[in-house]
Image (cartoon, rainbow, N blue to C red; front, top):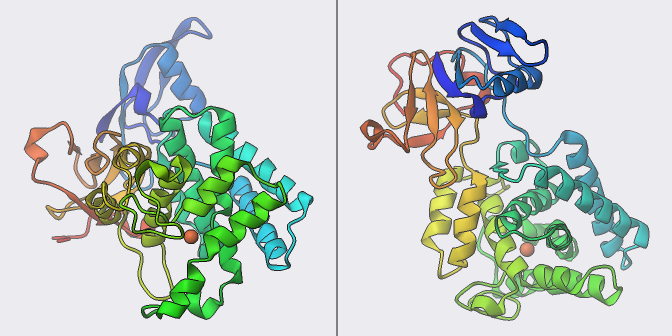
Length: 366
Ligand SMILES: [Fe+2]
């Protein structure tokens, strides 16, 4: 059992102790009994009653994962990108195909920006195997969260999301043998790959299907801060801000995804890679915003620690995404890796498989 501040309670958490409180609705004392799953309504009642926190049971799957976007919206997005990619392949994107993407964009912006402090739950974005289209959706959601960190208005967020959803449409024209090639590309093959940002961007802009900002985002997503990227070798702020944002999200999602030629790298290792390349490949300011908005260990994820223990993440700190607060499985305690100095030497070493967490493994070593 562990203590959670009321502001951090989530629907689905399993109450470990009774809570007696004054119910503002009925103007009388009320009780939430041990063993119930908290609901949005019961949490709201605790907030209204100014109850400071609750004891939550640590057993089994008692903390639900927070969802960034719902399944229906994900499917809508993926269908829309797929249909547009087909249109591009056939040489013509119809206005109906573009309308469908614009609807998705509006829904994504409305849904994600409803929570102004949203941290993107990367596990939520990793529930599918089909890389190409889900990759674009993941890049869109992460870019959106970063755009919010910079205070973009909704119109600008929509332009950014459209760019991210469509950034790799041009890849549909590249032979799949090159896209999925496990070994290094030949110079000729790489020349073909390098065409994909411009091919799609120009087609969309020429037919007046996207704004100039969206176009700049699509065309620039493989540029690098130090000028070594493609297609134009632009550097620094000569690269459009959308493209600088999408570059970070693109690399993050690509490296954390399963590909035919390699296993996904753990999110925290990829974040370290991105931090190491801030100022060379990536814009440092964007990387800082990205770290605040993308949770490598989302609330509810089951993690392994460097001291051999297993736990469930109960709180994320945007300023220290790699050091969350964790309820330890099998013990009545939680580790706050950010705030509690006694855990300074403990790090999270990975995320456990979701069905493998009901009991702490005996003498576990990570
Ligand atoms: Fe790309």
